[in-house]
Amino acid sequence: MESPMLTTSRRSSSCVGRGMIKNRTMTTTARDITLSMILLKRRSPPVPQIPFRPGPSRKTGWPYPLDKAANLFYQFVLLVQPEDVNQHLRHRLVQAWGNELVYLSLGVQGPGQACNLRDNGFNVIVGQRPGKTYEKAVADGWVPGETLFGIEEACQKGTIIMCLLSDAAVMSVWPTIKPYLTPGKALYFSHGFAITWNDRTGVVPPKDIDVIMVAPKGSGTSLRTMFLEGRGLNSSYAVYQDATGKAFDKTIALGIGIGSGYLFETTFIREATSDLTGERGSLMGAIQGLLLAQYEVLRENGHTPSEAFNETVEELTQSLMPLFAKNGMDWMYANCSTTAQRGALDWMTPFHDAIKPVVQKLYASVKSGNEAQISIDSNSKPDYREKLNAELKALRESEMWQTAVTVRKLRPENN
Image (cartoon, rainbow, N blue to C red):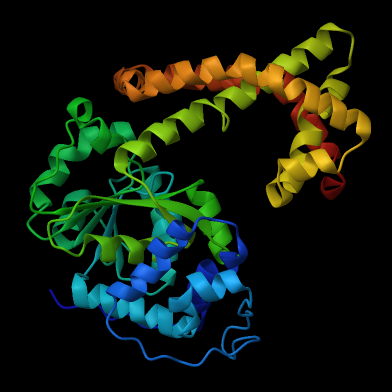
């Protein structure tokens, strides 16, 4: 198979440059930065050292940062223009391993990652069974017979099999995928579930392929949206199996290509356990439980639905979360009223003490594989979708989230 023609466009160069550079001023560990950028330089072929020019790039219009951290940790990026970074990464991909990237089903992460790589000039094809998702792929610009194929044909054509199916779907499609994982190919995931609990999933890759992961810390929708805005979503990465000696290069190049803000190292098992803990904990499960508990107590004590929702959810999401996302919770504590400050300082410990045992129980359940098994068992039941829809309907029609519908309509931007 011939190497793909990977051309540079102003749009793709700008997106990669912004995705890589704009977050340089973020506070992170030296190891994160070093692994994602300096080692990329160390492992790369020689790169022409273009002099550092402060101010806007003549081609892309985004400014180079001047902070010391950037100069220390982003030597690779500072030595080249974003267009050169893009060309260099593509050259390395083609030289090292690249013919075609294959996305199996678009799922949740697939559309964002596939479109970002395509916009960055990479040769991407999609493997998707007929159905609603297939039609969505067509709507996103994938052409049947050219860049959109059935799963079997796509796997046969591809060099990197990027498996972004749901965990349950990976298990069902694995017997179809495995015969096409011939020596020298790579199997890519964005979640460590299938590999970490492969004694339960049955996903055991051949020993003569690379097995790698880049896991964006957010939804595929956010990955795509931020990419189009010239920003990046942070991602973790891991190499599970390096059969070719080039797995690290593939992983880092793909991590940058999909639009990561920065990359930090993990392992498949650490990613899987932290991800499942987060989803069940502070990201979704715990936050819904906490919000509902406060809403219910306010309602039981005579507060109206509007007041209970505004004091519980709306103020948090619309006013406070953007501030502590930008500045940190310590900043929030230092920049609120003395009444709020005293109350928050007094009550954070009782909440911590009440919640930590629950989180410890949760983590133990995740680490033991119990949560994985619950997910596998529930997803395997023939009436799973019907029961799931009933649970989601009950959540959607609860008083708190029906109040949310009304409150959102009253926001100034919606009037």
